[in-house]
Amino acid sequence: MTMTTPPRPLDVEALFPELAAFRGTTTRLHPRPGGPGVSDSSVGGPVLWPADEPWPVCTEVHGRGRGRRPADIHRERRVLAAAWARDRPTDEERLLLDELRHEHRVPGITESAPLPLIAVAQFYRRDIADLPAGPDGSDLLQAFWCPFDRHGEGGYGMSLDLRWRRWWEVAEALTEPPRPEVVGFEGYVAEPCALHPEQVVTYPFAGLLPEELCARIDAWEEGLEEAREEAEDEEPEPPAYQYDLSIPPGWRVGGFASWHLTDPSPMDCRTCATPMELLVTIDSSEWDGGSASWIPQEENRRAPTFLSATPTGVTVGRHGELNIFACPIDPNHPHRWSIQ
Image 1 (cartoon, rainbow, N blue to C red):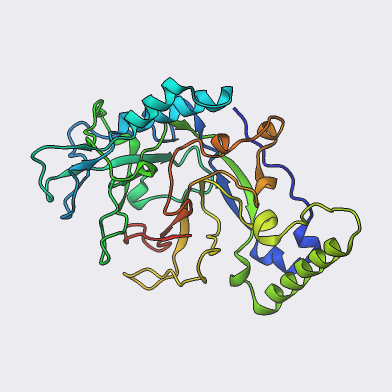
Image 2 (tube, rainbow, N blue to C red):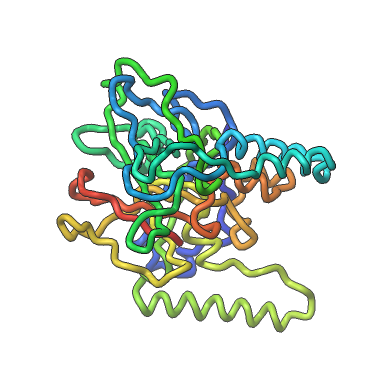
């Protein structure tokens, strides 16, 4: 399957030639439902994990004995997708959905028992143009997280674990990885999705551009809005730098982070103080009402829906995005992240 980003509504460098100096690239991953294998880059698919290597676990002390079963979450999504494709759920489906949404207890589990992490995604460097090399020639990046929001000082944070490896060193892959019996948040359970990488041009978040250039972009956008309001006929929304011309939505690798929820925050390496670079963005949706201009051409020919915009089932925070940063000097240094 090919996914093609439509041309941007206008040439932003023609309007603001200074942006050429800040031009970058990002690889849109375009996760879509599929049946990936361990040798594929994927979201929610099986990962290439050595059979003789311990599976990553969470050992932080927090409640982990009550939640929803992952299998029930997957089935709920299938039922809803089929129901809304027809029109709405039947009475029988509503009863089934109520049952699938029940929470369950895991008897005998303690708050410090090793809890298997969920494999979120894996990315082979051969597939993704903007994925940097890992430490010591590693070319496979794997992401895991704890299925409970019970971490950090406030006790409501996420726990993320990124692993680099050299894929050719895995002699025998684990076929049945351990899984948590219940999860605290359904947004941590990803649907199996194949990736359809596409490298596109991107520009920094406006608030990180030089002050004079950012002011000119703001003034240009205000002028477009004023012209739209003065028009007698109802005009479509004019293009905006943030939503149409700079940073694409959805899962992607490399490029620039969006800071639309908070002010830009310095992301310096805590080991060497080097400014970190965006490694991966994990997004709750592939587009929304404000970023519909990024819907791939192949899908815009159909009628895009909320379900088609959320193929992975992953939800970050309050339907936001997780930006993960890496040290460009030494990829062994700990990662940092921000939720927007």
